[in-house]
Image 1 (cartoon, rainbow, N blue to C red):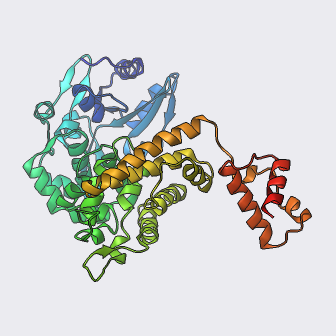
Image 2: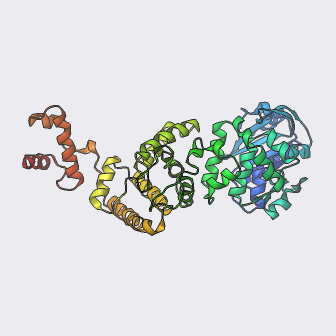
Length: 447
């Protein structure tokens, strides 16, 4: 059986010494039974909150009681955070999210009965073994997501379970029980009652799971429009062009298929990179589709959607920056790449992100015409690594001359900025060393 951390064994011993039952429950049991890494340890106990505080307050651990109203106590012992909740039953949910009433109980089975899926309704104690009244271990072996009790009732009680079912389906690669899947689809509209923060958290886990055809699958579950605001606008937007063989939505999904190992910011940039095409399409006289200014429109739409999804301002700015540059094709040329770095204030990570996003984008185009671009991007990535290893990093603020130097030379007004910008470009292009005398001499030669 799974080897429990010393801190977990210590906590179980404290409850035993106080004559209370205490079991590991939920995701940690599911994960160690599946052979997966365990990251969070949750417990259920018959001890009431005040009883837990009483016998743990003298122990060498930190207690956090912010959830004590609901019977939850957080215990930190030797840097491990553990969460213990008193057995409880729940009734009459409101807003399809929270129970109106709950009651503490001394019945572990009753507590497990309120949980979402059978694979999350297993309890474990090293001295007793598994407590599995709803056959969750059998469903683990079958690799199936099944609700505890009535599937539709479970989804209507707490609509977040709709996304949790889908997320487990993707991240565990388990199938959905037919009744569970039907309840997910039937009750998808209840997601309007769930906060954007909760939806965002579930979507992020799905994105980072590298699930193939993620957007199409979410659409088949009828939940996509509740997760990504505005995405329905790119469904069925065709791209009549030799460069494309997919509609915008399918193109985006295939691009996302090619983002394994990407950061969350990069993946979100791919999701939103072509949103603007829904508003920018026009056909020329030969019937070819063009999408002028779609980058700027995509930036605007992404900013609005990401704000609605409650992402932090700085994160939104980074995503929008990548979208703004995603169609400015990178060249495998050292001068071009140095100028790109200057444009990005010498942020190498952003430059590498841009190459990765353009690569995923190109993977979702007509392969007959995309291979040349893919080759250029592979070469660009190697060249950018070489430039980084050389230590090249000269920001605009690092220029060895300034406005006062230009004034002494007789420049005025907008001329000062123009000449400083020109000198910076010369340094970036390695036409002159970034030394004051060398720059002033170079400027005189320009005249």
